[in-house]
Image (cartoon, rainbow over all chains, first blue to last red; front, side, top):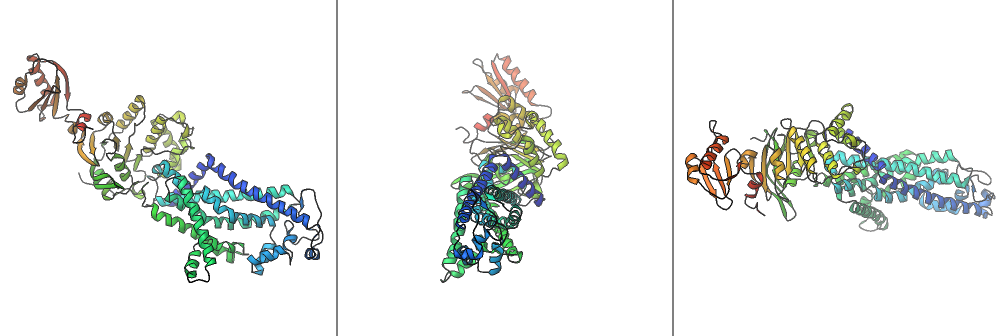
Length: 324
Length: 313
């Protein structure tokens, strides 16, 4: 089951997988898919910022008390708040001024004052990047990362490899390859978000936004780990790419359902069971990733990484015994 | 032959796919250093046997041992046992060099040695001119040769080749057979095929499979009767059966009227080899003006196979 040089084999398998994806159209499809999603959402978000900017030309009383009117620019939104900028970013003050409905809305999700202060100090584009990533990337991972093992099972190409390494190393290498690709594509997606913002917004604060995105990036990557694990688990259970993709989407739906049921049934007799199940669900740790400081975020990231390993390990229990 | 002496040993191996039984207590001993042929019709269980030997499939029962060290385990057998799996596709978007380098590195060939090793293999299977092209551009025959090449990366002790010449043109098939034959004595090679001529040409030992188990196994000459049987086909005309029996006293002489084949079974001794028996038989026949059509030592592997119970389909 194991090879004599496990880490070397994992590295070789991951590098081979990455190179194969780069050379084939698959990597191109994945990159285009992620970047299209990033461009679409960021462009629409910038348009919302634009509307907000127009709205702040005649701001309501709550906003006038804080900031005063904002200048109108033709099709572009000034990054500078009308009176005084509270933090780097775009129309930050308009969104997060004390007493604003946006801040109140955020307050329903974020109850800790320290977290609220931490988030409202971040550039909006970086917050939006993280939000969209946490919501959409799991779905994209299920579509794109569930293929590799199932595909080689389908073509039986796995048989050339299995005489040369162990199944554990092979699966770990595939998981690592997919994880690295996702991490890389997330950087490109962040770049697209920033490019769109830079294109449409006046005086875009590039460096603070880039710094904030760089701070969020490891959190998003950690959040992706269990979903990559789930995709790889599905791939191990399948002998075709189509079934692998279907299994992974069903798995994603199951995780989401468990998380929602744990919340919905919190006052019932089965709350204990669903609460315990929820702790094995990456959705449970989503909100923790928004908190300031790695004292809270670090353990959540570690647990998410552990969940990824757990999902892969569950698949391996089956995979090490399956016929290839 | 003990398990430790065998390069590949299967004992009582069974395998089912749902309701279909692929192997029914398969027993097989492949001596080290031999070129061993595994023969059988489609569905006889050859590929399943290979897949179990390579660890792709798990046997339902029985024991498997490779190189006397138990069933396949990458920790023990990596780089020592290789295979050409049937119907398995190599990565389509890699060049031949990259593909072989990956497989070679994975089986433990060092970074410095791998390039030279890949060049050796490409030369061996006559694909040097295509080294830098992607495998997706190769013809079926070239892919097959690449598959055979990867099985000889490094210095494997046991090579399992499942239908190596399947789909190759006659020239390519001949070259592959010559290459396999050239490996005699350097390592153990097991060739699975339903091409009996190929097995007869290349292999020094053979096992004939029937319905999931070995029906006959042994040295090729023994299985085909090459060393203890002479077949003489006669044309219409005199049939001096008594004269032949008299000349070959002590041997068993039988006549098949339907095929007009005179079958002589003898026991080879140092002072009386097959050539001597042929000479004595022909002298007796020619003396009686018999019309001789063909003389052969033993029967072809094909004939042997077809004479198995269930061989004639």
